[in-house]
Image (cartoon, rainbow, N blue to C red; front, side, top):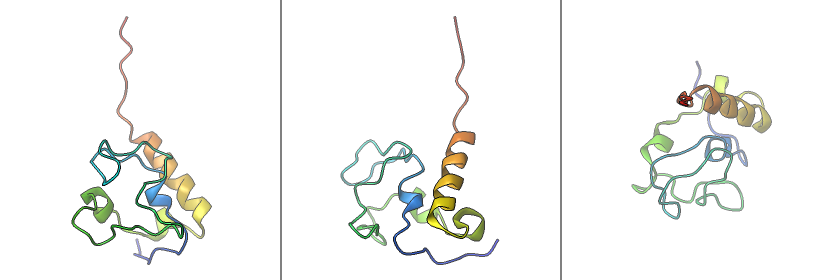
Length: 93
């Protein structure tokens, strides 16, 4: 899997996945599909490279499989990953 540089104005990884750790401005993290409050108007992370940035964000590395050829692909790929990695819910009666 080849690492790539993030494409400008994408922010799929800051929108599609849920984040359970605190983010400045979002102390309870963020639900899937909700843009992070740390995105600016150009869809750049305002805390990139800062210690306040959650480790899950720092650990996510852009690659061809995840990012594909365009932003729509990346959003759909990450949405699907979010769905398949959700904990199973038990149905007790």
